[in-house]
Image (cartoon, rainbow, N blue to C red):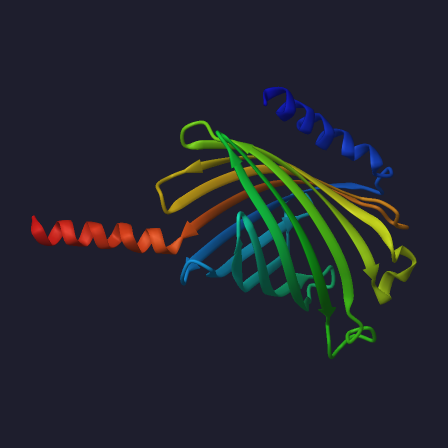
Length: 244
C-alpha cells in the first residue's frame, strides 16, 4: 500500500507536465467553511462559505456561497445537487455576479488507514445574467477529481488531482471541447474533535489548451463542521452541567 501511495503521489506531480508555460504565476489564499447536517440515513444538507485572495494575496478575488443537498445511494456512492452564488471582484473595482449549478457523483472507500475517493462534477454557470452580452449564454464544464488519504491518529495527509474539460463557453469558444485545467493538491487534515476537522493545503492550478494560460499557487485553510455531531456534543455538555 505504501508503494501505491508513492506511485499515486508521483503520478499527481507528473500531471503538471501537461500544462503549457503560463503567461504569469500568482499566489493566492483560499479560506473555506464547510457545514453539513444529516437529515436521515440518505439525505444531508450542505453549506459552504469561501473567500479568496489573489495577486500575491494582496487583493480580493471572490466570495462564494454554496447551498446544496446530497443523497446516499449506498456502498460509498453519493450524488449531490448544489447552487453557488459568486461575487467576483474585478480589476475595475466592481463585482461580477455569477450563478452556478453543480451535479456531483462521488464514490469513497476506506481500506484500513487509507481512504480513496473520486468525484465527477458537471457544472453550468451564468455570468452577469442581465448586464453582459453573453450573460444568458451558459458556460458548461466537466470536472473529474481523485483523492487518496492516510489517517495517522488525528491527522490525515492527503493528495488529490482534478482535471476540467470545457464543453462550451461563449466568451472563450475557441477552447471548447478541450481539457482546460489541472489542479493538484497536497493537504493535511486534523480532527479537532468528532464534529470539527481543520485542514490546510497547497494547491497548484495550471491552465492549458487556451490562448492565455495561467498558473496559480494557493495556500488553503478550511474548517469542516458536522452539525449533527456538534449539536450532540453541546447537548451532552449541557446535560452534564445540569447534573453537576
